[in-house]
Image 1 (cartoon, rainbow, N blue to C red):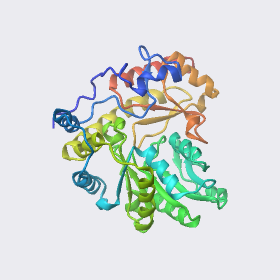
Image 2 (cartoon, rainbow, N blue to C red):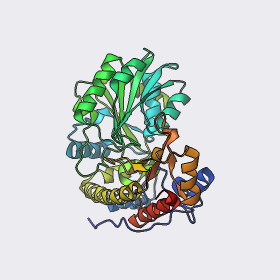
Image 3 (cartoon, rainbow, N blue to C red):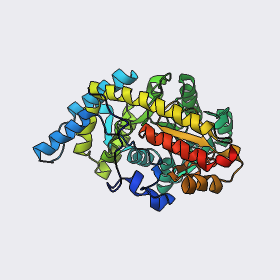
Image 4 (cartoon, rainbow, N blue to C red):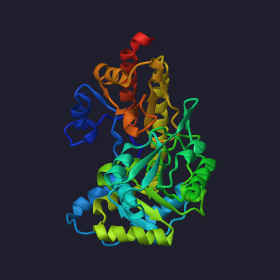
Length: 391
């Protein structure tokens, strides 16, 4: 495999990129002189094996229905076994239009209107949006912030349960905090679900993007006797989010039957481009690319954290996984609108507002560091200048 060039600056402006072309309308940051660090996709090309798969399809020139899932399923089996120690059977795999779609399908298949879904907040904002849109209630269980790191707080959460909750949606690894949950934490989460009769749905879309020194354990591997609905995808790992291709993987036959019925009722079938690209990605070449990527992201993380943590009142949460830095501005004593204005108007950086991630996120902004290192360094310099009066 040719070494990927993650330092290459790729102009994404005017390419229908949500990350770059939508940021001025949302944040007031013009792409021409601003830095986009909000949407969770990367400013890198995917591995060459993915590009070759797409080029092979366009060279053939006929774009019909995808008719044979065996190679795709085999690629998933190989990847999960070799990268995560997880043995998956082909009949367990359902392919959805990404994992927000997968989340919606799980809510639809396994809960009823008026019931509540438990979220450990702050957490990926699309969860709450999808749950509420389906006419379900969101039960926010705030994570405990201890020494700048998130911890689960089951004693407090036990007291919050009303009996109306029927599902827990776990983000593992955690977005936006970057935590890689330990074996013990996963076991305790499963026990919490048993105590309160909650179906456990686990979104593991970031499970390949783990920093050196940390190890992700799939929930179903950590707790093999616990019925779990697993959600995985190639989209974050390989920067192919536009394919909108994800998988809901269910070992339990009864849960699988219920989910299959909803898939059938809604007429959902996969995107052939996404299947071809995912099949190519889950390969030895794809694995080598991910190893190079995580090493590069680790370098970006050190640069970003060192620069941000040098600003009095700012604290970047230690990143164990993902490429999403979670920065706490509470030490500045500023209101959210004030520190956000400095980031957007002075530094000209578009970052996600912490309040959108639920309770506990109000003093934070989320920054995407999956971009060439020179841009990360530029962002750090801009932030230091914007908060220069605090130095």
